[in-house]
Amino acid sequence: MNLPRAASLILFLVASCSFDYGSLQGGHLGTDSGAAGANANDGAVGGSPGVGGHGDGSVGTGGNTTSPPDAPIATGGSGGSTASPFDAPIASGGSGASAGTGGVGVGATGGAGEIGGGGSSGFGGRGDAGVPDAPGAQPDVPIGGSGGAPTIGGTTTAGGTTASGGTSGGGGGTLTTLASGQNWPQGIAVDATSVYWTNYRGGTVMKVPTGGGTPTTLASGFGPELIAVDATSVYWTNEGTTSLTDGDGTVMKMPAGGGTPTTLASGQSIPRFIAVDDTNVYWINADGTVMKVPTGGGTPTTLASGQNEPIGIAVDATSVYWTNVDGYTVMKVPIGGGTPTTLASSPGIQWAIAVDTTSVYWVTPAGTVMKMPTGGGTPTTLASGQGEGWAIAVDSASVYWTTSDYGTVMKAPIGGGAPTTLASGQNHPLGIAVDATSVYWITSNYDYDDGMVMKLTPK
Image (tube, one colour):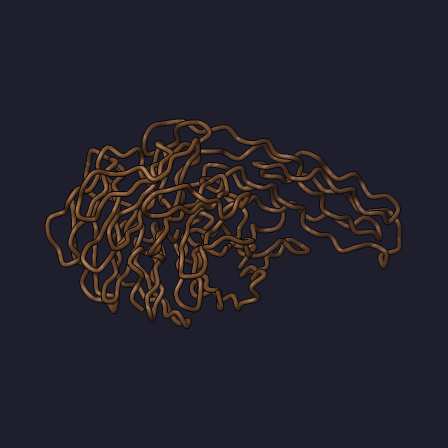
């Protein structure tokens, strides 16, 4: 299936720690401990995990009676929630309690965490306290205690084991793992037959049949970021050495069925976000420029410059759209060139963006999903309180997004209505794409080999 012009399969996440969006570091370890059990009673439960805490409260000890039939099975304690998925992994669960004489203790829940402060350092690291790192930034907050392993799409169960895959939500569809063990996956795109993604740390461009099968490496030896696809080819960005002054980033193309990669543009300043239509490839550079080049090759053209840390890109029949993180704006410019127009502005960060034939959609780290006419007008709130929105896609009926901190994949009618949870218990769901029947996304806890490519049918 040929992709809709707007990159309704737009994928937006930022891979390395090279953007200067600062960090919300995780809080302190939980300290509230479970009280000791007495005479077959369970140990008391510790304090609830706070936002930002990497909780690992100590556990209650077992009772001292000799009646094992009355003693419950020990369960792993709950890890605290991370302050921000932008650069913190999920905390590990606490340890299960040791059995007393005849009794079995219950693991305590981690104590309340504290919200971490913003990071520091310049472009390419941590900066601007209170503003989250770009998606995909390398974690700098320690994982929680020694109990159950961090869940990968599931929940910590008795004894600290992990359930995998997560669960589908209200839609009741079939949740399928198309690929696992991926090395920090980044962008995702889909065509009529295959799903495509990039492994940033693995340096590979990958694909797998939409119906399932063995993943195939299309290209390797790169530093791939985001990805787009049309009826015949796959396109991606290589960020280079992550230095604005080096200008060694590239925009690449290769046949979707495999072959030799072609460089469409070189000398770019950390290119990341990418979209494609029938004639051009469009991308954003970290130096604040919006670019295009013909899909068949040619001279790159600057459509806009001086943008304030642009993020995300989408295209329709007439215009290119993007968001400015530091400018708090949603922007557009004609695909043939011209003066950029501010569609929306607000006192908060605008994040990933998608477009259809009539409207532009975006999500925010504050958990709001927005919509407004492509020609301008008043923005409409489609959903709020959704957690930290990360990536967004749209089809003729619904808008879809991921919330990395909540671990959910969501949708809502484009005309307005209650949001639906499509999948929960996901391990930092990031990029998202849709086709006629299914929704696809990637997960990554920023470890180097725990990434997954997921599919839910029907959407």
